[in-house]
Image 1 (cartoon, rainbow, N blue to C red):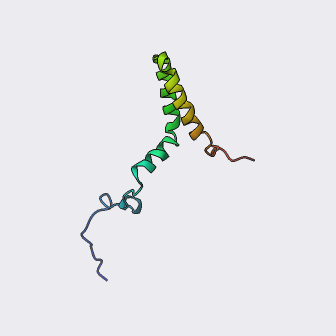
Image 2 (tube, rainbow, N blue to C red):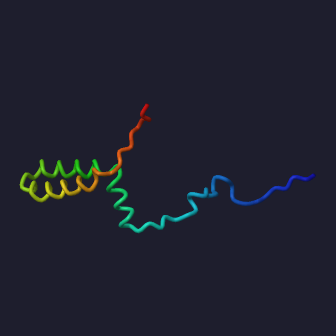
Image 3 (cartoon, rainbow, N blue to C red):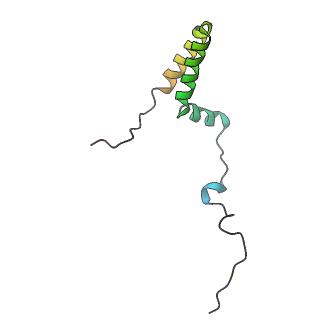
Length: 84
């Protein structure tokens, strides 16, 4: 039997199944997921730096960071190791 050779895109140029679909999440939902994820430490750290750099902003930034921390901290904790 003769082996057929298919001329087409090579595997380096083909997209996998996950790359074919565009994200359909609204930008507000994406931002909420980002802010509740790993970026929460960066946001709170930036707020602490802002209060250190400009002490007059403690009232405004302090209340905003406390509100943000109350929104972020109730999330479920994911432990890096499995409990025995």
